[in-house]
Length: 117
Image (tube, rainbow, N blue to C red; front, side, top):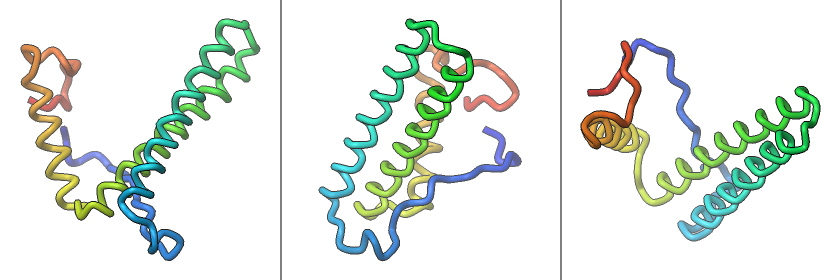
């Protein structure tokens, strides 16, 4: 992936509000956020099935995307609490992206200018 693109990384929740949270607390938050993604996805699908107005579908799509970002933040927060620094998370992301790019005969990612692998 091109490193020239602007990249906004998830910021872990590590302020005073969370100073007493354990790894288990962060893991449970991760599970909670995953559940919220599922609910938002079902809400979007319901809007499509019920033929609700386009603006309602758009609103529900944005809610789903926000919940996905919340899930990324929860995962980042959990990883940091487990001792995985930002630098380590970036190395892991690079490793996993490159590993996935080679799996399944390279068919996991669309071909384009910013491909990995």
